Image 1 (spheres, rainbow, N blue to C red):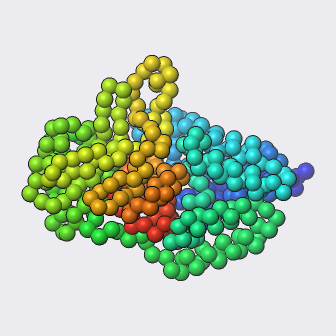
Image 2: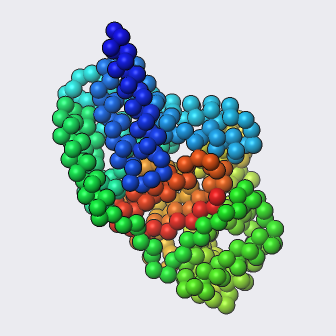
Image 3: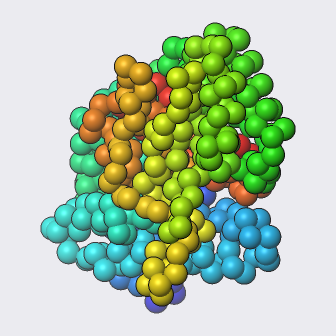
Amino acid sequence: MRREYIRSALLISASMAIGVVGWSGYVALLPVALAFPVLWSIARTRMIAALVSAGYFLAALRGLPQGVATFYSSDIWPGFLLWLCASLSFVAVHTVLWTGTAGIRSFRYLLAAVIMAIPPFGITGWAHPVTAAGVLFPGWGWWGLGLMTAGLAGLVTRIWPAVAIALTGFWLWSAAIWTDPKLPEAWHGVDLELGVSLGRDTGLQRQRDMIATVRRAAGNGARFVVLPESALGFWTPTVERLWTGALADGDATVIAGAVVIDADGYDNVLVAIDRNGSRILYSERMPVPGSMWQPWRSWFGESGGARADFFANPIASIVASQAAPLICYEQLIVWPVLQSMLHDPDAILAIGNGWWTEGTSIVAIQRAATTAWAKLFAKPLVIAFNT
C-alpha cells in the first residue's frame, strides 16, 4: 500500500513539473507537455488520473491567480478561485474518459483531446499538448497535425516508450534546423510598454503619440503597421477622423486593436485604417471568459460584457492578402487558429494587451503557442503586444 502511495505521489508531482516546464513560455519546451498523456494513461485509478490532470493543468496556469489579482486590483483569493474553476472542465473530461482498459484507451484520450479543443469545453482548453505539433513537425501543416494526433494516441498505449523515442527524434531534428517564423514583407508589429493605461487613456495626446509611432514605422519602410489590442481605445467617429486625417498623406495601413460599444455590450476588434478611410477588420471570436465574456448577464436581463461568436470571421482580408487574426486569449486555445488555417491565410496576426500579466509567464506562453502554430503551417507571423 505504501508503495502505491509513493507511486501516485510521483505521478502527480511529475504532472506538475511537466505543466511548469512545458508551459514555461519557451517554444522549444512545448513538447514536454506530451508527457502528460503518458502519466494519465499509467494512472491505476480514476482518482489518480483526476489528480494527475489537475496537477498538470494547474501548474500550466500557475500565473492566473496573480494575473487576476492585478487585473482587478484585489487580493489573491479571487484569482485563486478562478484558477480552480478554470481547471474543472479539463479535469472533469480527463477523469470521465480515463479507462483502465488498454484496448480503448487511445480512443478515449483522443476524444478528450478533441473535446478540449472545441467549444464548449475548449473555451478553457489551455495547455493543450497538440500545440507542440509546430515544434516537432515545422512546415508539415495538416500532415504534421495528423502525425501529432497519432503520436498522442500512441503515447497512451503499451508501446508508448517507442512512440516517445520517435517523437523525441523529431524534436531533436526540429531543434537542429529551427528558425523563427518570418515577418511578412513590409509589415511591422509594434510592441508597447504602456501598462494599464493602454485603452484607458483616451486623450488626444495618447492618440497623437500612437500616430507618431506609426509614422516612425512607416518611415522605416513599413506599409502595414500593427498595434496591440486596445491601442485605439474606444472606436468613435472622432477617433476615426483623427486617424484617417493623419494618414491622408501616406501609403501606410494601420491595423490596431479597439473597442466598439453599443447598448448591449461591446466587441473587441481589429480596425484597419488608411488614407481612404477605415473598417472593422475582425471581431474577437473568444474574449477572455469571466473578465470580458460574461454570458450569464443575459440570463438575468442585464447587458454588458464582450460578445463572443465562436466561429465567425476566421480570416481578415487586407488589400490582396488574407490574415488569420488572433487576439489575446485566442492564442491560448486551439480551435480559433485551426479554423483560420482551414482558409489557408497568408499570415497570422497576433495581438494582445498583457499589462495584467506582469510577473507571470502568460504573455510568453501566448507568444510561444502562436509561434508553434505559425511554424506548423509555415505562415509568417506578426506580433504586437502591450505589457
